[in-house]
Length: 339
Image (tube, rainbow, N blue to C red; front, side, top):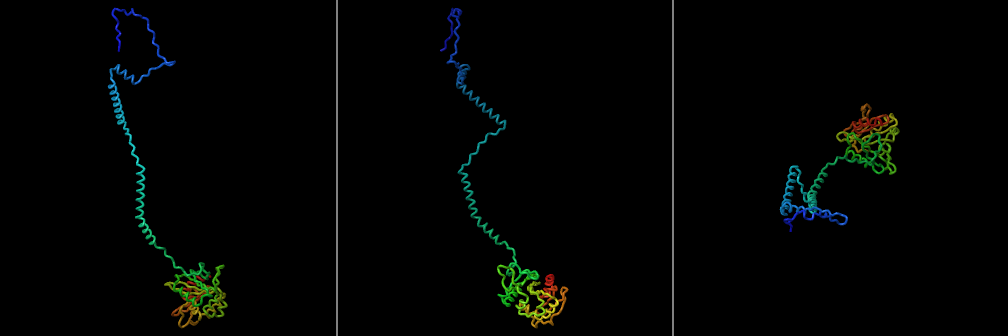
C-alpha cells in the first residue's frame, strides 16, 4: 500500500534534520557488480504501469503487427515477380517402378512368341527363293592339270590303253562327241599306256606307232620313218553343235612325209572310224578319190563323200593336221602353224 508524503501543519521544513542521508551503495557479490537485465516481461510491466495498457491489448497489438508484416511481405513478393516455391512431386514408389518393368518384359515376350514364327518363315522363304548362279557342267577330266598337247586344249579325256580296249575307247570318244564341245573349243584325247604313279604327275603317253597299232592300221614305211613320237588326237567344236575329230602328227622330213601320206590316204578313213567311232564311207575311200585344193594358202588333200569328209595339210614343214571337216581344218591349221 502506497504512503502519502503529507507534512504536518505548523511544522517548518527547515526544522527537520537536514543531515544528508548516506548514499546507497550498490549491492555487490564478491568483486563483480550485478547488472540488471531488461526483459520482455519488464517491458510489458512498464507498459501496463506507464501507458495504461493491459495484457490483452498488448497481445492484440502484437498480432496486428505480425499480420501487417505478413501482408507487406506478400505484396513485395507479388511486385517483384518471384514465383512461389514449387512443391516437389511425390516420388513414385519402388514397387510401382518394378511393376512397370515386369509388365513391359511380359509384353515383349508375348510379342516375340506371336511374331517370331512369321518372321522366321518369311526369312526362310526369301532365302530359298534366291536364285543360285548358273554353273557350267563339269567336264570329265581325269586330272586337274591338263596333259601337255601340241595345240592348247580347253578340256581333256585321258585313256589308259592297258586297261581299256579299243572298242571301249571308241565308245567313250563317241559319247564325248554326243555330249558336245563348245564352239571353237578343243578337247584333248590323251592316250596313256599306264596310269601315272603317285610320285609323278607326268603321264606315260603312247607313241604315234602305238596309236596306229591301237587302230589296227598299217603305216607305210616312208611315213613311219618320218613320223616323230609326239602326236595329238582331239575334238573341236563347230557351229550348230557339230563336234569334229582331228589328228595332228609331227614329222622330221616333209618330203618323205608327203610321199608317206599319199600312201596312207586309203587307210585314213578306218583310223577315224576305229578311234573316233565315225561312220565310214560306204564305197570306201581310195587314193583316187582325194583331190588337191588350197586352204589358207596351203595345198590341201581332201576327200568329200556323202557321209563324211577327210582333209589334211601341212601347217608347217614339221606338222601335219588331219580333220573330218574343211572348216575345222582351217581353224586347226592356224593354231598348229607355230607349233
